[in-house]
Image (tube, rainbow, N blue to C red; front, side, top):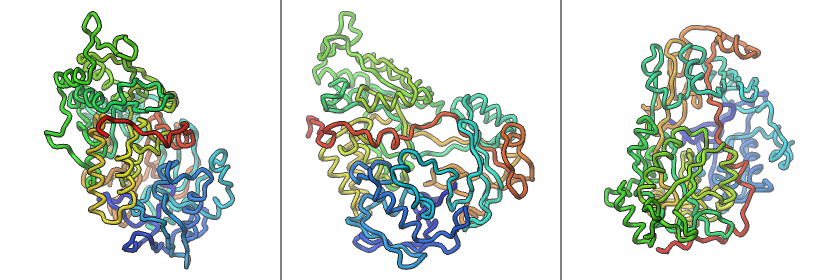
Length: 552
């Protein structure tokens, strides 16, 4: 909301749309991109935006000391990995030259930085000490104030190049307790929340509250430690894709949706969710790993795990000669996945595999995963609009970086590079379909559910709430895209008011204009910034790892 992109990577129909770049062209060979920028954008401190800011952003990232186009230190890097140079023939034109085509550069997930501020920030400081306070962008809202674990306050940018938002202030309030958050919405202390799934039924019966549900670009999965390095502490059985497949047959995804997610999710198969309409692949009924405990038991027998303990409760693990027991880690903020873990524990027991469920905080989750100490884990993540980064996480080069399952396969790596530099859209789509099939059969993940975005808002204070269900490719909440050019029915106050939360709960300096607030919130449960935690910690010899799956 504070920054703008060159190209907005997610329009209402899921494709790229103009942002600071009002139009752009790409050469037939995919090696030259020409951007034409708007003439009326201004940074929040009054300095005009020019093409020099766009060039600076690309140069700053690609010249960064820890830039590694193979490792992709952060998701941003995957959108710049073949950028060679950028020239600016005038203040409103930039020409980007590539070493090789870059398929996802047309739907880029990076914001543009102000050159006049960041050129004075040493790159080493940017990594470690620079706070960027206040953040200066060109976006529809300006940063005003914040307090850690309490609130963030933004004011409308009345000079935004697309036109001033119709609300003056947005206040994000943080709640440690989801029940307190729900009650705050019911009492009218906040206007919109992202509710816990267990409260949706209650809120749906409240007068003056509306619920929106729409598909997300997120998955929640059971992941396996497939790492073949001697440092791995994962159970060796998990290196065998047939063992992973057998466990996949022992999971009832429909029951997980109904019992753990209160029906507010969709059973999943492929790693790319249906929301990614252009790229999603679904297995045929014959290809699907259906829930079938008898088949799971038969597969485990065929692999060779035929010995059971005296009570015939658990199979014998040949590595330890003890009852087969796998640890499974799950973050303590993912309530639905904790419930799913209990269900999985019961099903796995029915095929002779014990599960020790470990519920921990996010920091411990990341550290334990980095150390290769997990056998299995339940986790979630959301994807960019383009699938390149999501698919890159399963490449060998990401071991020690973004990979959480340590998967490595030369065939898959080659398919990733093929789509990464594809020029022809149809060829790229076909390759991505092949990659999904490959991952599905290799099963480094068993994708459990595609989650739904759920939003609850009051109907008596503001009108014009965005309805993402009417935009099939859209996967962002109302506050990300306040654009009068494309959304004339943008959020508008029914009447001017001073929000009670702003005056009684949080002390802030009120900005100019009519005092129309949107009091939005976020639960005080943060997704770990994996780039900051994982990206610069590499495991030794990671680049040389190759999984020795039997079929390859």
